[in-house]
Length: 503
Image (cartoon, rainbow, N blue to C red):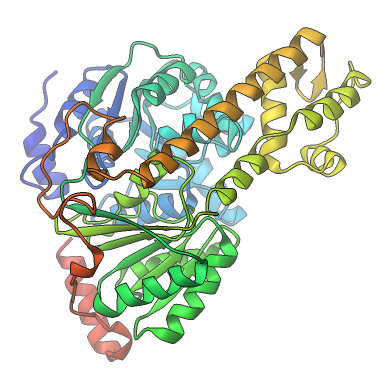
């Protein structure tokens, strides 16, 4: 059955035409094809499943990595009149969650985390429903996070199987051919139709600058932001530095600055995000926990205070700038010592060989018994959560850990897990080396950044990079500041209604 997708788009979402890649991905899933869609940040990936959810009937299940992202998307959809949407997450209070779960089949679009999907009762409930479309948003997380950080991403193929193989859509903004293969392999869907679109953002200028110390980095940021008044994101790999620099910028700049990281209370994080979205904040100092799926179109500057662990992370974070098509700029600051922090982060994610030996020595004595709870294992062996997740998942994957009981830790199994650990160490360090190599590029930085991902690099619509014709000192963004906090409550109410009418 063919659908008039242009009319459905106009009537339900208010757009006159599709953006690049949207119509092709939507057509694929409406024809029952599993599809892997790689569309650049800002091209409206969420429409690729929101529109089919309207057409297909039944339930569209969207696996999403961040609660703040789910809540934000549900709020936006409800504001546009899409009422049959909900997000099942740990942020809901028990009565609210129970009410939603009881009436789950009343929603056409359900956002959920990969961890929540492991709930047996929920899986049983979903099996009795008509799940027509299974969506993995930010699908690169399967490859990037799944192996050790959030191993529940690697169990999604089991959920798909349990639901009777609904049509699957996996979406991401950045994925090398290697990561694309990994996504399809982990989903056990080797024949997914691939819709891969160029990810080079033509409206972003790139610059990298070396500093002698973190203090010099802060001074440089102050210098840049004194000249430029525009929505800005500053990325950090350390929560402490995000807070420290935000306090200093508040003192030294006439701008509204806040910090955001995973260690904050959920309500505080959501408040900061909403303030930034509503232009009540100018600058946000954040860790990678912020920004995924945040649909703020007018971010003009993205600064990296620390090195991202890989080029994919950098491209994702930079891609949050200039989603409206307007000019934007990326500045990465580094010191000669900066590679130590991402190396330490890799060490905190993966167990050492000694850790494996101690854990396996303990587990061999527990054959046929239940092993301690996760917290107990983490405490006993002084592991991080992701280090234990890595070991536990490998045991489950090899069939040695079933329903919490050990059923066979053999020397061959231990050797296999050791081999895979070495593979992951090598993979992570190679990714970091690619990042280090890129910051020392002397010719066109744009080409060097995007070449691992695509064959052809398009001509930029702005000055290219500091290897070609761009300098951060040439930058001059002076955008009108919306000071909501100085308006009366009557003015603010009028603005809210005006915004609502324009949706």
